[in-house]
Image (cartoon, rainbow, N blue to C red; front, side, top):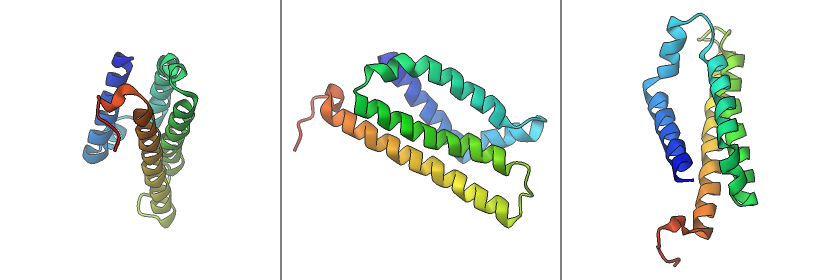
Length: 131
């Protein structure tokens, strides 16, 4: 599972860079269609790729990862699709953006919680003893 953990790490690193640099906003400025459509396809492909990885995890971790991922993706992709056709300086657009960012942050928090619980019960603690 090391390869999948590495890909997961690289994916989160890319998402962090994108959040700061606004890569997806730049993509949106040069294409006619929303980046979110392509993003949804990528998410679907990654979900299929990570299915064996998820099935190998303990049930509680699997459920935690799926819930966290669902919330994050619904915020990042779903709310982007909803908010995209709106005027960018409108109250509704700004509220949609707030919900989008909140869902992304909440999804990440839930993922970290599930990951830390998983690490607490496996050898991922790298030999560190519990205190």
